[in-house]
Length: 412
Image 1: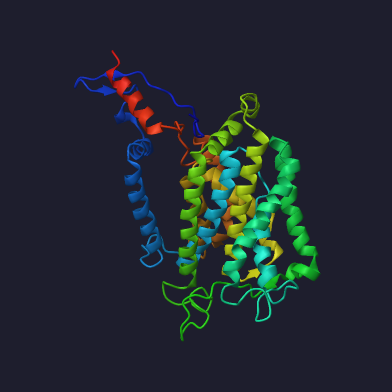
Image 2: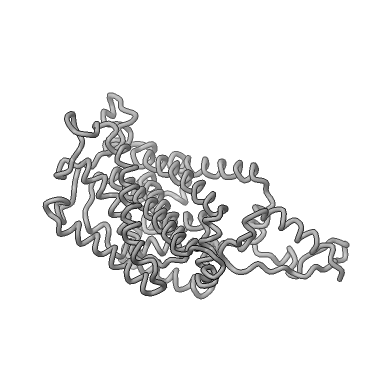
């Protein structure tokens, strides 16, 4: 069986306490709260985990409707903040496949985000020469955005395949430089191809889902006209993004527990050793790159539909670094950890928006806060806030029970 990312698993020597019960060398009383929570979670059955997960995501979905006062963002709609969080969380999950699972340092992931957004914009914006929305065109107005989402994912995955085939034989810094250049090339192409992308002016009136139409909302609940109340268009986009997050987490989780996931971990830990053991490393690295690209394209399509405007400045290198920051902050290799990292990246600037200290708007200092947070994190917790635990992927729960039983029965 293969192991997940993180530090190597250590078996502690069993000791018998005064009560006759076996305890580990560290002892449960000395475990940190996070370790106790992880141990409790590892002991749950799959059905119990599903139940806890459904309750947690259900409570998360209700946050825009019943927002606690301490979580509210006074300078901006909380529903809009959560919609932005859903987009960045999808990006973080896709980037985690590339960086956290396969160990490929990708500094230009924003390029895939841009390809997905521009695919939807080019096919649906009236300002695009490739517009396909209308009575005599390929897409109907009501379903144009939904029809473009799989197209955006397919084109972005193809872009990842084209980029990855010649470049994934590189490693480390060389691969990072190539991907960084790719992200800048996509942005510069969008900025200079004025006849197609409308240059720096961008593409406006991008299609979005026309669902929930009524007399008050003729364009549906996803329209920017639905701007009043808690269930505004930001909240609806958040609910859609949350549903996509759940689906992607299930897909990526199944991949992690499969032969593909074990191969990714082997490549990340030691590519040469994996190659010697018979793992086709290039093939599995390419799989990670293509899957991560498709997920990034999905988030780009979500962004294009929500904002209804796509322009080159959105896809700069700073945003690519913020996406990577979400993965590092949450914990590389931990799916739920990077989702929390995405929440911090999005929520903190919006929460501080309009808050002034000594005449300085704290919302404008987000990059300073993120830089300080990363420095402190790298010093005290280099694996991130929620580092993934090393554990057996095949028959993991049964093996842990056997090891604990043997540990408790070990002589003093």
